[in-house]
Amino acid sequence: MNTQTTKTDSQALHTSETRRGFLRSLVTGSVAATTGLASGLDISPLNYFSNSAIAGELKKKQKRVILLWLAGGASQLETFDPKPGAVTGGPFRAIPTSVPGTHISELMPEIAKRTNKMCIIRSLNTRNADHGGGALLMMRGRANESGGLKYPDLGAVIAKEMGRIDSKVPDYISFYAQTEGRGAAPGDSGFLGSRFAPMHIYEKAVPENMQRMSQLTELDHQQRSDLRELFSKQFSQNRFSSSVNSHNEAYQRVRGIMASEKLFDISQEPDKIRHRYGPTLFGEQALATRRLIEAGVPFVRLARAWWDSHGQNFETHQELVPELDHVLSTLIDDLGERGLLENTLIITLAEFGRTPGINQALGRDHFASAWSCSLTGCGIKGGALYGKTDAKGEKVIDGEIGAARLFATIYSALGINPQKNYHVGSRPVPLTDPGTESIDEVLA
Image 1 (cartoon, rainbow, N blue to C red):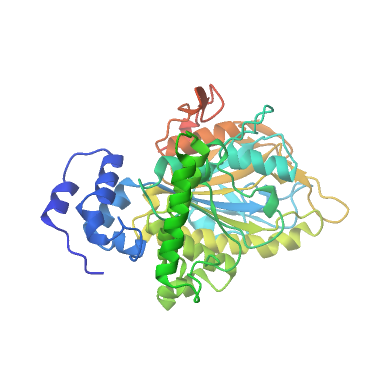
Image 2 (tube, helix red, strand yellow; image 1 turned 90 degrees about the horizontal axis):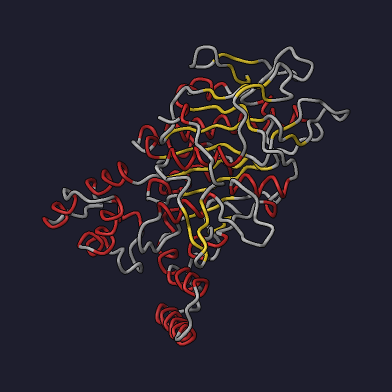
């Protein structure tokens, strides 16, 4: 990676521009021509960041999000809000953290050392304990309107707000390896259209069908693309449709996506880095996530299933929580060492939590009345603890919030006005429910 910065590039880097103006100059100006990304054909997007000055500026200005989606509903009592000694507490101890007075489950010793870098919210009351409804709510911050308006999920909003102008590569990538719960939260760009829809990866860390078929020549591939574009232009003549335009934009990015294959290839990483993340699929996909984030992809959802522990809750969490502890702590360290954590927000979230009551199968059932999540990195005050539940974890007694306020806080941490309006036709649609305020106490 020896791309040289031209004099024009150097001047551009020192011009007082807005973030979007700066990114536009990278894509449409001489830097894009130098890296080859303007064509979106033969150059891996990694080369876009090969120049240290450009990479440094992007690290400072471009914000990103990693959503660790704990599909099925992780137990707050075995993670961020333990109740040792209570009849609802279960067998695991609470351990002190790097924040005096804050304790979390003994199953998370590495996160306990890094709690001073994160915010724990213990007071979610989202009132929907159904997998489908809860997942939709917690991916969007609100339910779809009864009239049929489909809201975009968090990933689509971040893709629109933070995606690179004229990007040829995905702005929203979703890893979901397990089959359980996949259909409950598939990722959806809603009224924002296909341009901001997720790229789904279901197996391993590399997307399927990324490479051109061996029996298809490069010329054939180009000609097929040209033919599709011709038909598309003919269809679009005298038709104005945001859905058609969005669909065409999504197709136009195919060649850029194919050129980005190496972004997903963790074999490009040194052995010590791969060992650090570990040999599990969750760890390998987390490493791919870091590579994508480092290359400027604004939003990656990394799902881990299945936390739906109606039976054998403690055995389930004894297996899954240490893996989460390892992956989350590794991401925090790796992003921090690379200068990326201050501009990357890591979220742990699920569709709901688990009941304080332990059922006859030694399990915990669905529970949306008093549960937890965490926020780490960009725009978040390290060591913050917000909200409180009672001694048994049965209800919130301080700082109760719903999905809307959590999402307003996430947007505010990223510098997005949670009350800004999108438009569906001439109709203004606010990003969050009107009047929703962020939790200023946890914002840096």
